[in-house]
Length: 119
Image (tube, rainbow, N blue to C red; front, side, top):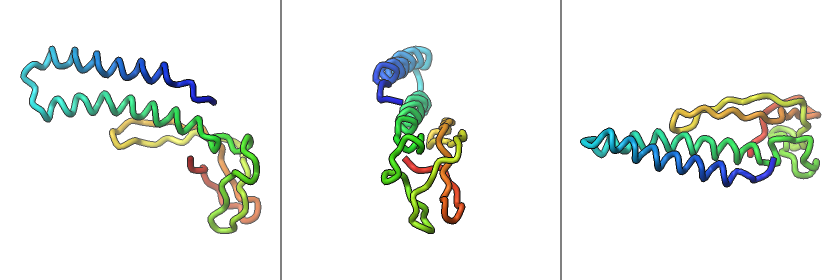
């Protein structure tokens, strides 16, 4: 997966701007805390999308494509990990947005420890 997200990210940012303008018109007497919460909610969605896209663009998302010398190593053995299929990992961001990351599941060929690689 390449870094071809720029247009999508610009569209999401534009949605935040227009959404906040519309929200502000509808909430003319909102307090600073209410404005901040509305903005954080919208920015949280953009942040989550950018985070997910950037993580999935990582070379570590697909271990099979990474050269052996660039793969993460087992914390216990120091041996480069091997890909054993892929799985979806769901994470929650700081702003309660759900990320779905499909990544290689890595296994140590020596001790059998398994993990989702970082990156």
